Image (cartoon, rainbow, N blue to C red; front, side, top):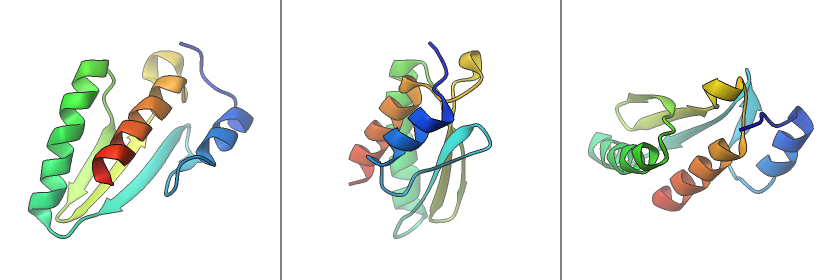
Length: 93
């Protein structure tokens, strides 16, 4: 899988609310009602990521989930990252 150019990434990001590009990855922060809701969504994302064999860099503090996506094998952001971002957005909405 080939890394996308910065221009391609920024064009694709126009389709994603709440995501931005920096430090060679796309990032979002999602706030939930409480820890239980945050952890539930993390679990659902984990199953989808495992199916794709594409795992996010993420952290969770109480009700806040920070997610960064990049494809390490390609040393940058690829279509695979945007596919997982779409799945994440669909799970959250």
